[in-house]
Image (cartoon, one colour):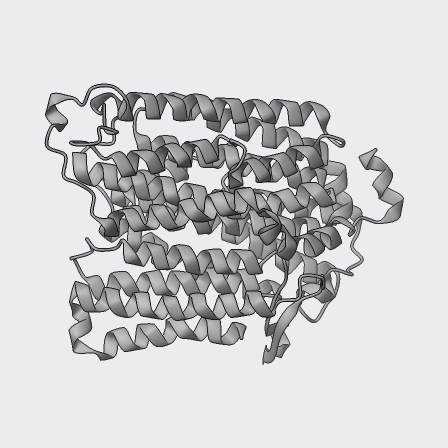
Amino acid sequence: MLNILLLIPLVGIIILWLIPQASSLYVSRILSIITISLALGVSLVLLIQFNPMDDSLQFLENIPWLAPLGLTYRLGADGLSLPLIVLNNLLTGLALFRSDEAHHRPRLYFTLILFLNVGVTGAFSAQNLLLFFLFYELELIPLYLLIAIWGGAQRGYAATKFLIYTAVSGILLLAAFLGVAWFSQSTTFDYQSLQHHHLPINVQYLLLIALLIGFGIKMPLVPFHTWLPDAHVEASTPISVLLAGVLLKLGTYGLLRFGLGLFPEPWLALSPFLAGWAVVSVLYGAFTAIAQTDMKKMVAFSSIGHMGYILLAAAAATPLSLLGAVFQMVSHGLISAMLFFLVGVIYQKTGTRDIHSLRGLLNPERGLPIIGSLMILGVMASAGIPGMVGFISEFLIFRGSFPVFPVQTLLAMIGTGLTAVYFLLLVNQTFFGRLTSNLSNVPQARWSERTPGIILAILIVTFGLQPAWLTGWIESSTTALSHVFPISTTTLHS
């Protein structure tokens, strides 16, 4: 089934280039939406067939490939990866739905998005370290081109910066993966085989640090974050949605799967440092977001802080904190995607993202009342208001991390309050008050522009009120991941 999930977008790409009419925006967009709708349907079938009580890998595909290199085509899914696979297909579908302005080379544009989907799904399902690396690098090319060709005025600079940072990330990951196999004298790069490696502890520290920096760039964490605001500001709205909603999760997923999963002893020893690093990212992201006047930059910097919560949960590595970490990945994917969609509509209708140039957009007659209402719901969810998905993820993380790192958890909780501050500044400035004269003729948002926000709002509230519908798929896998620590070292937690 996972093979089918990867083949569907590839078949869609072939069809795009075989049909002459697909050179038009309308046809290529419709074909791409149909393709991803099929992929989303298959991923939902996988979710239904998934046994949430089984913490082992399911839907395994194992095909020999390059045996002398230790590279096998080995795919599988568990509670750590399957929710992210579904999220990837959902947000890709919504991004394609809103890609109605790609008039320049539309066939190439939609081809690159479908390739991006393949790369991300493959990375989440790969159970061979080299295979994961190949998929991890595959998403680099289409995302670079999507920013460089269809981005804003500084798109070349932003795309090149993204390319350099991500290339460094890939080099570090490849070096760490090769090191695991080399020093353990393994003939395979299969993840499950390498979990039982016997490496000198100093080598484990070195390899883990390489993974921490590599995935820290992707998340991104301070000080490796500077590529993210530039990429978001210059990328088009659909690409910003995929970047924040899905691509950042490759870093957090990799950190849990390969950092914690392969090197539990050094991870446990370094966990106080990781918790401190998480606090720095949370507070830096929040304070920097407060200083922004560009709505898109504000949402981008908020992502840095929310990725810090995941690092804090991973550092604590308790069953509850790891459950919260994966829940936060899904939660942030839904919330950030919604906010970027709405900021895109506001920019399209008003011609600006400067919060000091906007006011009164909640005006029911001449403003954007539905977009404004959705934006208020989105910022409330991001700030962790009860009844929404953001509250559940943050509560799980803080509750699971506090027994291990009480001071760091309390400091990270300040970030939640600061999130409310900068988003309240945004909402109060742009949506309330009297509509300014230069915005007296704001075009009304079409239902097609509102639909992605409405769908995501429904999911945000649904999982906020009924979190068991999501935690049920995750819990067994994260609980098993928290038990990778050797009994002799768990006393370091106390």
